[in-house]
Image (cartoon, rainbow, N blue to C red; front, top):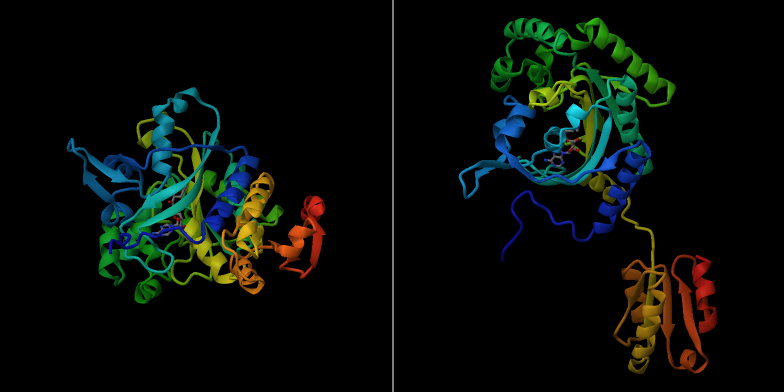
Length: 409
Ligand code: HAM
């Protein structure tokens, strides 16, 4: 039997949940002025090496990278930001100036070791805002994330940090490297000291975490501009009732961040606790060959949200109509009635005549709200058997009154 590849999952019995999540994400982003973009899933490998960064795990170990038939090195996108920035520059919006805001959703690919909440193909909903320097937009991006999670009824903790800018970060890195070189750290950390020392702060190894207890913190080494932006961000969030924790060790796994970095984490997911992550990336457009342009955004992991919602909401809400007949001779009748009702309602028509108990069981299994059935008596009297499977309302009603009854729901 041919099976899906390791770490790749079908969304087959929970498609409605997927669409529900996307709908809430889209509505929320649109209310903040973001517009839909769709960009290719395959890009030149160099795009990700230059943006996500050579020192990141994504580029180092996780890229789905291969040669096409013309021997070009191409890569399935591991994340969405790089591609949106590439498109932004390619369409010369960097030169046009002004503020542009985009949202997207779709597959991302990372060759990671699969585990709960971690897949090789997964889906993100992401937003990216270009050309806005104001820290109010950092706050808006965070608040969009908070509103989406609140509407989905997902409890998370928001962690925020500032990663400084190209002036203060190098000075901090030097201080940090001096400190790290005086500690005993794991092999991975030793490698990171050379490639990207701030990633050492992220190490999950317990003995490394102990060694890092007295490490210098970026939040104490910010220059005036970064410090005042970070203070203002905290003030805006507080004023607007967004709870957060400052985590000076939050560095994120991608190299392009400057100033604001944040993550919403859930304790319902085990070790893969990040549900949504993002931040500011003011150097990325220039770094990829465009005119210097501010950038800020986030991405939400859709499978992680689905995981939390399906752990909790095993009881899905009943929805739609189950329409059936007790005898084969009425199937034509209910088929036509079904076509009519489907102009307005979601209707599942059973083509099989069964006894009432079996039909009721099928309707229940399909999680339908309304049961409608025609038998000999109903047919004779121009009636239909109506049952609401949630509140038990059970009666015979005239077919001419059916629509009125259904509209009561
Ligand atoms: P990221 O933190 O790498 O950021 O990914 C965002 C979210 O995608 C994570 O918080 C997580 O929920 C989900 N995710 C990541 N890897 C996996 C995986 N292997 N399986 C399932 N879910 C996963 C970015 O991708 C940035 N582009 C976000 C961004 C946008 N920053 C600025 N703009």
